[in-house]
Amino acid sequence: MRILVLALSFLTVAFSAQAETKIAVVDTQAVIAQTNAAERAREILKIETEEAQKNIDKLEKELKKKQDDLMNKKSVLSEDKFKEEEDKLKKAVRDYRMEVRASQEGLDRRNLELRKPIVDAVREVIIDIAKKEGYTAILPTKLVVFHETEIDLTEEVLKRTNKKLDK
Image (cartoon, rainbow, N blue to C red; front, side):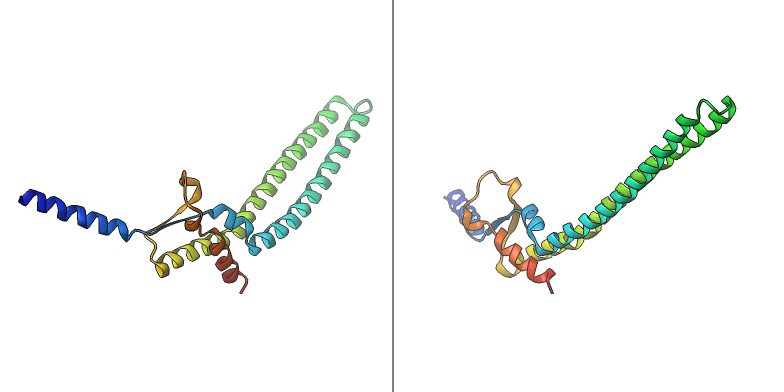
């Protein structure tokens, strides 16, 4: 009899704990991508990418001209002088490649720099909603196989994130 009462007590505690569990889901990637701040960041990055591409195109054009000039002079230059000019061209090619790599790395850093405040704001909004509305867990939709639409907070998180970032 005691065991039965003890088992019933555990079941009652388990069911009451389960009844208090409040879970929601959020498509964080969609929220991050759809914020007004993300649109502004994409515009900034587009402009900066175009500027970097203009610079790369200019360097590439100069490099191509140097290569063409060297090939045109090949028949009139001594072998040593041609080798010296060819070495200069090879160095210019290496410098160009380094510049392309540095430019891409700079754009990657800039993208992260522009995205960080958005990601941080989304996280803060989700935590705020969880605390104020008593959620036990708010999970990314990518980790959930199935969920009812009523527990999807994506639109609410997007609305609050835009409000927070558009101040």
